[in-house]
Each structure stands twice: as C-alpha cells, then as structure tokens.
Image 1 (cartoon, rainbow, N blue to C red):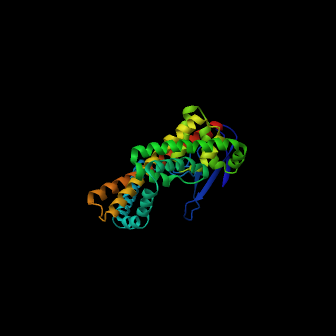
Image 2 (cartoon, helix red, strand yellow):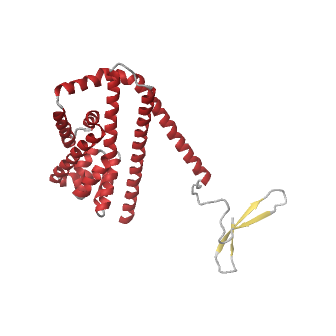
Image 3 (cartoon, rainbow, N blue to C red):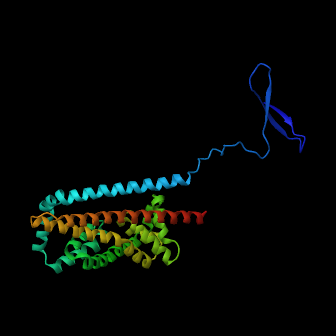
Length: 302
C-alpha cells in the first residue's frame, strides 16, 4: 500500500492500494477510496433487519404453537375427566366433602371460608384452596362476594403491618433491585397510574403474599393499592371459583357412579381450555405492560 497527496482540495494524505491482477507483465490496478462513498453491501457489522415476510411467518409459527398447546391441554383435560378425575374424586375429594357437610353447618362454613381468605395471606399461607371450597359450596355469585370481601381484608392487614417495618423492608428491597424496580412502579405518578400499576402487578406472576408486605415501602397510597389489588385479583378469583365448581361436578358424577356425558365432557373441556388460555393471555399482557412502564420510567430517570 502506498500514499499520495490529494492536490485538489488540501494536502491530506490518501491511501492508495495496488493489487496485482495476474499475468507476467506486472500490470497493476489502482483502487482508490472515494470520499463520501462506502463499500457496497457493508452495513457496519449490524445484524440484518428481518423482512416483513419473515415477521408474518414468525406470527404464524407463534399462533401454530399456541393452537398445538391448546389441543394438547384439551386432550389432557378429556383424559382427566374420563379416567383420572373419577378415581381421584373417590379417594380424596368426596371424603373431604362428606366430612365438611357432616361437621359444619352452612353459616359456620361461610365464616370459616371468610376468615381463611382474610387471614391466611397475613400468615404467609395460600388461600386458593379456600376459594375452591367457596366455589364448590356457594357458586359464582355468593362465592365471588365472599372471596372479594375477605381478600380486601387479606391485602389490607399486611399493608398496615408492613408500615411498622418500613425501614427493614426498604433494606430488604435494596438487596433485590431488579424485583424491587417492578413493585416501585406502583408508587410513581398520580392516583390512576398507581392503580394501574398495582392491578398489573396483581395479574402478573409476582408473588402475591410478598407484595402485600412490600407495597407500603413503595410509597403507594392505600386507595389505589386496595382498588388495584381487588381489580387485579378478579381473574384469579374466577379461575379459583371455576375450579371449585369443576371439582364439584366431577365429585357429583363419581358419587352417583356414572361418568360424564359427551356434552358435559366437551363443555367442561372447552371451559377448562378457555380458562387456561385466558389466564395465560392476561398474564402475558400484564407482564408486557409492566415492562413498558418500567422502560418508560427508566427513560425519565436518565
């Protein structure tokens, strides 16, 4: 490689490359880099952007996987309804239901269910089994009212208790900055922004009981915390009630010593698949919205 002086504009030195083409006559071809010109086909090392056709095929492939997953879940539901369910009902569920009927009267059972939904989250115990029993015993209407009333207490008590350990919770959150950045979104913005962030956190798979105690350390007000939590828990409550009713249907069929009819199997299978699909879609949507809120918050802080 040699250099020559560019006399047109200034005295800058420009590299000149000589390449032997071939042959014995010693001819050379001069390759000179033109100013303002970039080599064709070179994009600076960046990855090529996918075309629109590739994007369409990606969505087709994604939906194909979703359909296959739903079909697989539907087949599992049919197998469970036809063979596994009745056996499990005879050995576990029917004895529990019979014990429940013989031990507690309906008013006492309602009080126990309400107390468990209200107090178990404070004691770091899951309240989902109590929601199943509420669905089995009370159905959608009264079951939902009982659960939502108990949940209001169940999320309020940890909030009040957490305020007594505010500084300790702050120190604990500093040990997990990535997780803490998600729940801190609930303490930013106005009333509606806090309500929306709390509802999305409740829908997302963030640990339910942990957030009950950590929420107060994010400076979220009690009003948006309570309403956002109740709204975000609605999908979970309906899934729990549906599960309880579904278990009760299987138990009744097994107790009467008859299998479910084909329409019942199809109806319950479709309902089960729809419940699972709705839960997955809502959870994915909540996670994406939380991610967008987190990214926008980071941009504002920069």
